[in-house]
Length: 414
Image (tube, rainbow, N blue to C red):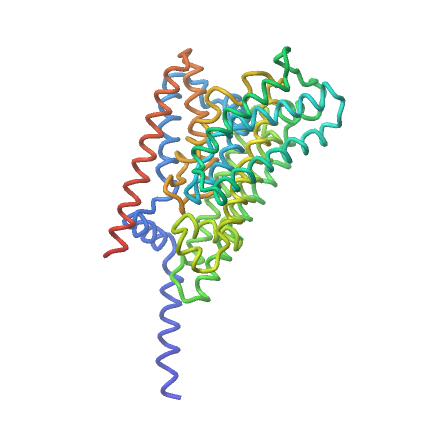
């Protein structure tokens, strides 16, 4: 009996320590992670605050509810494409053709839906199916022929741009009917105010459940984890923040269903990256492909899956972009779509070196890019400033990623 009492006392002491960690423990955990090179989304959030403060001081319209609604709606198409970019960056690869694939998909939908009279759902399915085949092709070129994804996707950029021009024909532009479901979804459909609050609460609850499951798993494996109090504090703060954002957007036109669709995709990808065997395999391949192969992971299938997802997300983003403009034309998917999608993923915190990143990278990164674009538009400045500022922000994001990578390496050696 006396042999057991000390163990019980130690267990109870450890439990009391866990119970008292709370916010202070969460802060300590963050500081330790930061010293190890893992700063999370904090730099992006600080960047958004700086951007908002600067542009609001220069033009009081910037933080108006109406302008923020516009920013949220304009962010969706590129944000969805950026979600696919996150997938390929996590395995240390790249897809430079997402802009061309998005424009090609938008053109396919316009031709089948408007010119050939197909049902819009079938037209969208065909476009996404074609994109799936494109992604699988990139996977074959990489795994079978050893062609670097940089080269294969660069070739795809040119090829699919040519196909887009070919199917649009001499007319060069096809307008989508304003009364169609696609255009209404991208321009006019907004969530009822009461439902938007419910959806925000459900999103916070989903993230709390994900965090609690992760905490429980780590404790069962005798690994360090945050305390329940810290998780509750973080989740309550997120809930309050989301509800305030929804309340403010409802002062304008409200939350668009397209924004809800994008948020749902982000949560779905977050779950896939963090709670599935596939997601763990993706991170493992990005961290060390040879070690992943030796551990039994089917690296070839992982490459196929991420390239397929990337191309499919590009197609979905292209369809949304065409719907937002109510038109598919020669400029769809061209210009800075490619660069913005890639930049959003990197600015949001996804590493160019593979193995680190999250679905929220696409969300945060695209908000930075669209906020800069909106602020400069309100100041009547041309796009040259936007390219320069976005380039500087991208350079800073890559520098932070490189420094964090070095810090993690030195911390690991220590």
